[in-house]
Length: 263
View 1 (tube, rainbow, N blue to C red):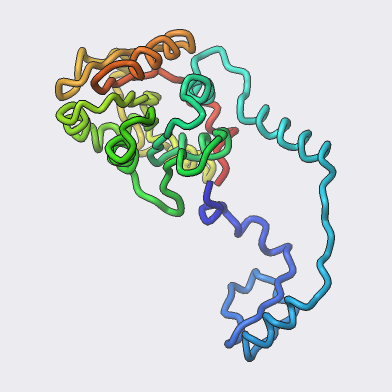
View 2 (cartoon, one colour):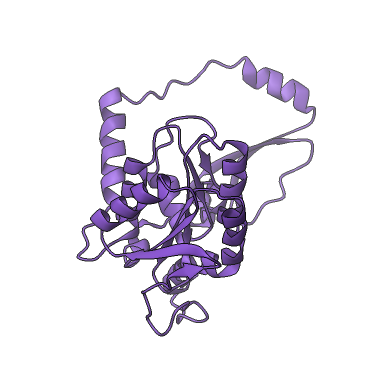
């Protein structure tokens, strides 16, 4: 996931900064600039390119251990159906050359860390202070551009409420796209940020009535509900072999986002 959204203020004050530019550094007082080189950038870059490379190699075993620890941390134990389980099912079912389109929210952080892309241009995500509403249009575009490739869209319930009308276009075009909706009843990314700042949850509840059973269809697109990995795998396989779109609404417990969303 794009690190532009990481809260760098929490650690940048401890990092020594070398500023190279045509003007003096214009930075916050908390940033420690240890040296400045102000002048001709071409000369500065040429000089830096001639410097010997500092080796900072990680042994392969260390890299593997770090990756394993990180991936395990993204999948905390939970008694309920969790977003990380949904993502694993989608990855297991979607062929290696299949395309995943993702919307914006807490699930974007989770998928960006957890997802493995096996081929170029198979992971469609909008990064860097991006707005909700990307997932469904991106999935439609991918399927129209590559009708021979399987395409799956994963999005949150808030994103789905904003753009669900677009599934009608998928129906008109007979695009066999499974839209996997993570229904946790919250705008979870905002909720997590509010909690971390010690603020009360405000304006983040999507479904206060707690209804987790989808209707039979949205805009004529068949909808089904699942609350476990086996059910999701079954419906996802069925949707990928269909000749029209399907909405798979997953009832998930997003409590682990407080542990796995990095901001």
